[in-house]
Amino acid sequence: MGAAAALPLGASAETKGGASRPADKSADRVDPFELDELTIADLQQAMQSGKESARSLVKKYQARIEAVDRKGPATLNSVIEVNPDALEIAEALDRERSAKGARGPLHGIPVLIKDNIDTADRMHTTAGSLALVDAHPSEDAFLVRRLREAGAVILGKTNLSEWANIRCSYSTSGWSGRGGLTKNPYALDRNPCGSSSGSGAAVAASLCAVAVGTETDGSVVSPSSANGIVGMKPTVGLVSRTGVIPISYSQDTAGPMCRTVRDVAILLGALADSDPADKATTDDKRKALADYSKALDPRGLKGARIGVARNYFGFDDTVDAVLGHALDALKHEGATLVDPAEIPNMDKVGESELTVHLYELKSGLANYFARLGKHAPMKSLKDVIEFNEKHKSHEMPYFGQDLFEKSVKKGSLQSYEYQEALARCRRLARTEGIDATMDKFKLDAFVAPTLGPACLTDLVVGDRWRGEASTAAAVSGYPSITVPAGFIFGLPIGLLFFGRAWSEATLLKLAYAFEQATKIRKPPRFLPSAELTA
Image (cartoon, rainbow, N blue to C red; front, side, top):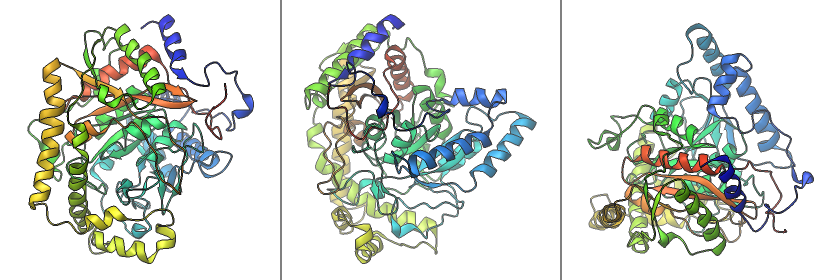
């Protein structure tokens, strides 16, 4: 889509507030930052020209974290810990660049990672829980090794919904016992969504170049949507889970969270690799690219057949209006929309999905703690439950651990209940769901609203999210990517693309073409609340 068409699409994607409202200069409560919105390519160009170095970038991002995350009018609280070795690592990478040249596009780029991903350094890995503050992994997670090999600087770790939001059925996203509460940079009284809340808020606020989150069901794409960024959940098995605190072996995966589709593609290429310790990454059907940026094409929507998953629409008229403009943009760029292309039986998955999670959580945590070795502060989920009870005032001041208590009562992964629930999930989501519908309509991908606008943070009642469309891709273990599609009262709304296993290149191509045609993303303004008046 040309520039003339992009402007009205971007303007009409602002619903109920903001678009027709004059700029409120007093609302810009955070000082401008010279690295605001800069991409990986921008930062590489600055380092290549000598204007910046890896060291100078780290220092500037550290200062930004101190000014915006730790204090000031925003105090986002998205970064749970800054890497004390980041400057030293950056200096070594600068010397290497000077002597040998850059390793690749991530050389010297500061990256934040979620605090459920192991690092064998002076940082902690706690999943936000005080129960793990004394845990010190002896090995990097496999994906962290990949980032280090690519030349990235691990800038620090991000806050999250504690234990990736599996502890309690009525939790508040973005809160952890160790990290406290993360805020949404678009409206500080709104929730950043979970469980990769810190990664989403930090990327949106330019506290880093890019970040890594993890997802079981919605925990990459939903906070990406709520924080107005691009986030991709890969096919389970594209990125190793070794060294990542688990929930569900059948659904867990790490994924990139960035401000642009191109940066997602670059980061995904660094993360994706086969790991002998994670059998899902050695699947014979696995399809991975060394460079996903080669899939990007501004005309990538031309000739594509895209199914409109209408079963994820209809929960909010204003969201439907924003998505209506997004669908118009897809058609304008040459896509054929199959509307509706509803995925059957998604309303029948929930109970079986939870059963799978409860079984796999207990087993997965036992395996993870065993990996930590004899010095692991916890040995089992039962130990964690007991710790939380003993430290109730700090760990459970707002919500409990009912899901932990249900999980600890489950048997082994050989039990009939687990095997039946897992088979039912895969049949409904894969065979009779995404695969069957794509075959029926000959689709390249589906689209749906990723999530409704960010809800108010409420530590009394808990989360009140509406319209999450992540489940079909999550339960099937298939890929999805969210891209900013518009705003409601100044709050971001994302468009979710999802499809078959190993279709990351296709989804990136489609998402990139949509992003380039619309250019809807706007940086956050750190407003106290949503823009409710016209």
